[in-house]
Length: 221
Length: 244
Image 1 (spheres, helix red, strand yellow):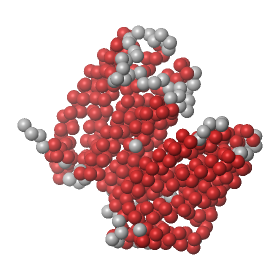
Image 2 (cartoon, helix red, strand yellow):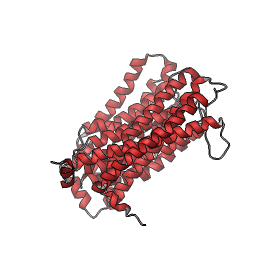
Image 3 (cartoon, rainbow over the protein chains, first blue to last red):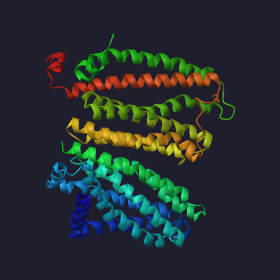
Image 4 (cartoon, each protein chain N blue to C red):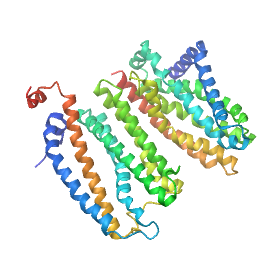
């Protein structure tokens, strides 16, 4: 547990020393979400209907951009190898990486999202729900994303490949996350969507770290 | 007589066995497909509501079945390779992937051709269609990941992890009809209740499914032979059999 906290603090500190990386992901998120409005037109009802989907797709793409760095920098300077041969279980290393990644991308994305929701004329209850769905859903992006990032370590064209591998696996998050907000707009109880989103979070917190550990062992074999 | 199955885990031992099996499975595929196509297109009655257009079911349903089944088989081989560390398992997974992707594409394509006259549209964002599309993406991701590594060992093991991750998606596909229950008709064939179609239709469909199954085995074995030759090209036995 001490090792976990230490690793999370290390990743946060490294990221805060190079703030550009976090900020760029957020700016990318906002730009993509705004471009959709420019492409579709300013009709408020139409924008309201597509708001949740746009925010969620933009969040998936932004997470995708941030993921290649998750292990690559540590692999390049040899830290990753040292972490894996340390007495610390690999799972602790992976879990710390995932937690730090969520704190640095998922959480800020979720907090910025209501602002985009305002641009898209979402009512107050839908704004809150958008925030809640992102808070439940973005950890999944980090959990499965860690597995993907570990799989493509050292591969040719890792960035594009990562999108190809991960985006299909992210589909349930997108469907239930955006579905919750859309259901609320239609006056339906979004509880079912949020429950399924939570179920998917539970499944991926079992599967994602396991796959990431296995993939790291393969990558550093 | 006990057969030592592990002996066939060696590519060298499996290569000639696969070579002997390919023509048999190819023959079986033709032997099932010919009566299946005959029953499906000439004997089976015209559907009361959909007319003749429903006959694409004899291509569509076997392709859809195989697309999901092959993914599980591929993930099974991949998992076996991960656990037992056998070289052949990864090669089998690589050999199955293109056939699975092909059947997924055929299922989507024939579904579009079927959807136009019956639903009046080529494509709907129905849960089952969408998950079949995602299955195609999963196959393509698996093939792309395998192609991204120069080291085949690394490619096999990374691919195996991805295949197992994706296998979680296949049950979601299957149950999606019950969960979301949208435009796509419910499954026509069920083990627990009487089938809702004429006996000849069912027979034709099952024959076509068996044909698709045999075809997949034949093609996968033929392909795995090529992969074995490619990967083991520096081994003495390959050089000897190639006569160089």
